Image 1 (spheres, rainbow, N blue to C red):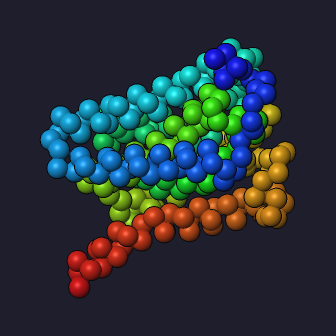
Image 2: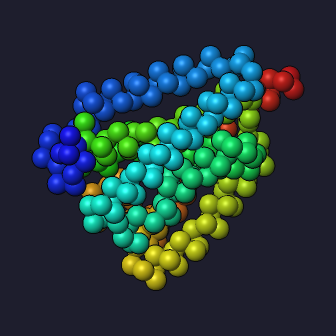
Length: 239
């Protein structure tokens, strides 16, 4: 059992679009369809679902921090909760408790968009199935995708055009202190101080700082696509 928690894992590495990858995505798809049955459930049942989702997501994130500490991998340069998905994991948990509209807007646009990109190409390296990191990664990022979908499809929350504006302004304001922190401690959270040292899709974009503009445009396009179903619904309602 210990081998599945070691940092020096000698099992099969993660295989992009391999059987385990598709299996994890399939399980996530089944979970989302399963949660739809709670549309007609009472508030007590829905609140119980929210607490279960919160416990699973935060539990997986906390154990990831503990895993890094026990393996001597925790450092302020790499593990602070400053990456977008890391921040959203904690905010989504608060959202599940409070159902705050402003938190929902950020988790809907940024959580779903970011989780889809990460789940499609997770950076797991040597940690293939059934290592702890495999399950932890698909749990946290999978629930980062599932929670706003659940709150939208089951609990009736939804974004507006103003939501989109708030998210765009908010993420750009957030980038300022993160850039300053990166400059002070030598980190690269949000990948805004430099391109990653490892191969990534950012290699296809221009050099710093111009690739940041491309990242923002891609993010804006993703947000517009996520808002499209509501725009269509509103337009039909006015017709």
